Image (cartoon, rainbow over all chains, first blue to last red):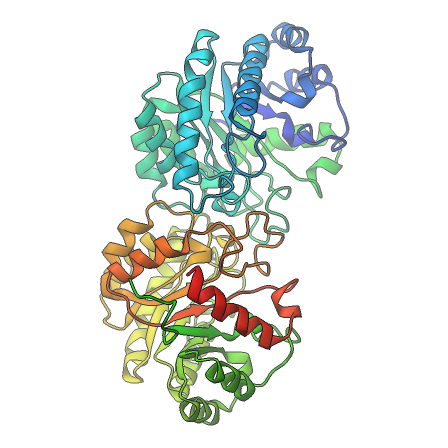
Length: 285
Length: 285
């Protein structure tokens, strides 16, 4: 297991930690300012959200490269199914392709997929998962041509209805198995999977298909399941045990800090947030 | 699979559906009035909460018997672990025994166990689940002497931190396997397990250890994960498919409607709620 107390090269910031995934949230730092602040502190990488990139992908990518920071990924493909997805298959696929194009232009090797919830008119998750597999299968060659890998991210089952019919690493790997596309894998976010006693077995099964590992914490008395994630060390997730299993499966990539926190961390000075992450990354992750 | 369109004998009301699990919620009907209203409509059983029983268990039980209604169960044992449990092992076990005593006095054959969350000072769920198993093992003979069976109820993983370190039927059955106590089994609540693609396999594994089946629905756009459960048919859970698997495993007992709904059903006339349940039970369950 890598020793993060001495080596920060694996630390990446997901800019949602500064509120950049939500219009009007956070301090409103530009991508460039965020890049510089991460580089100054020795972060190894950064992950952006589409809404902050807009049409400036090439410029932002160049700024990151010049600062010595890897653009590790892009959040995210549109919801592929469910009540919050674009309306109709063609609209979904058009936006899916647009997100792949942006990842390619940004030089981000990974595009995260949050599947969306239960497809209207159906019950349970089976039919929705089938649709997800179909749509990822269709987009995978398009992504491969652009050197983009697709990371299926299972979300906590609390989101099963509207945001993610994909709730376990088991189900994500079942889709990977069915597709057998070399550029489709999974993202393992501690917030979503910390409770799952089947996780060690599924991580071993995942092997080289782990494309991302996301860090935050689950607050025992969480007040909001979307926007009240905890800083590493403030919750009940067993971060070191999970990372140990992720690395035992072969993952040696960046560990991406992604904390949606409207009531706490988004209200603080981003400099303080970035400094706290460094401290926690070195001690409790 | 039983035909509920013609036979309501398997329908039971969990009185939380009328708000009786929370002080001051709902219309405040007495247990006796609730029993009579259920009996008039042909319900087969009823499940009470400790707070509404107080010291009147024998009288309430007699009233139910006279009305032809089975008292199917009691909610619930105290949290056994986690931040909301009584402080200290002895306090937990004392209240656990008191809840068993009340179930026995009420003639309720089943006491539901919600485990409680992650034990303070630990991370992940492993240590907490071990403590749960220890405490249930200790109480099981006491319950058996009083003809009370203990139903471990896994809760949606969103409650993992504070209310239930037990989040899947798989984990509940693992505890049952470890204990091998003939009066310890599981409760299957659609609200908590609807998303789990492993459910069919685990239900088959459960066999005769299924002690209860709880009905409500998961609203796709749920506004509160504790008190915004849906009426059967208003959400995305595949109720009939789940019941089919529950019955295929051998369960032929009561199906208990349990809808925590502070913003909707608890505000309505209980008579309307009970009538709506009958309609939905016969059509969508």
